[in-house]
Structure formats: structure tokens, C-alpha cells
Length: 154
Image 1: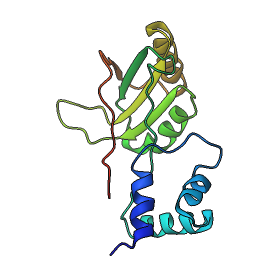
Image 2: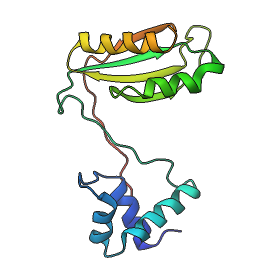
Image 3: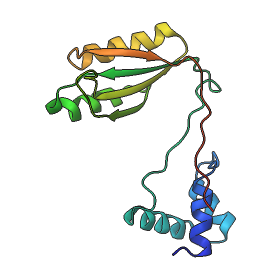
Image 4: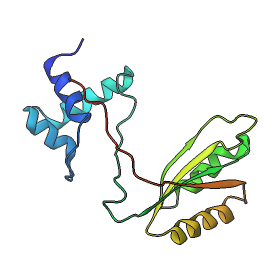
């Protein structure tokens, strides 16, 4: 199903990607192919749903953010897209996604906010609250940073 280049690209993408201006070009150079070929194969993997997404892991404590707040919001179904877009406009929001609700958990939008202090996180939450029409929310703080890793393939 996969040739040696496919396996090498998937392997590179499942590990740490270099923090360089053109990471796909660097991968291509390491594999002895063109950047266009790397990008074409990644697109093909996505089209075939072999790769769903390529994501970054932020080690927030290492970059100076000591506070980490997951804010859960109860947003009416017909306002989710507009509200999530507004939430994502805040640079402090690093994740924003929808989750199913249940009778004991009405919160369907989750946002992750990183800050240098608890007060800074709460200030951002207040600004979002005022901007999105005051939906019910809860702030859940991380007590410790858990190990973050990706599955390594090939």
C-alpha cells in the first residue's frame, strides 16, 4: 500500500517537525525529493483519509505559560459557528472545538487558553464572555502538564 517514500514522509510527520521557515522543504531535502512531491503525497494521504490532520504540540510551560485553562461553554446550536469564530479570534485561544452534550453536561464548545497567570487567563475569559453574548461557562484549570506524544509510524 505504501512505498518507501510514503513511509518515510509519514514517519517524519509523526515525529518532531523542525522549527524552520519551510519544514516541508526540509523534509523533502532529507528524503532526496522535491517539496512539491512531499506536499502532493500529503494531500493524497488526506484525500484518502490516511492522515486526518497535522497538528502541533505546545509545551506551554516551556514557553513561559504557567497557567492553562480549559473553558467549556454552553452555546446554542444555531450560534456555534459564529461564536467559535469569535473565540478563535483571540490569540490566547490555542484550541477551540465542539463536543457532544448530555443532560448533566450542557457544555458543547471547549477553548484552551494559556496565560502567564491565573488572573490573565480569567481576564481573557471575561473578554470572550463579553464578546460572545454572555454564554454560560466553566473554567477548568490544569494542575499539571501531562506527557504529550504522537504515535510514531514506520
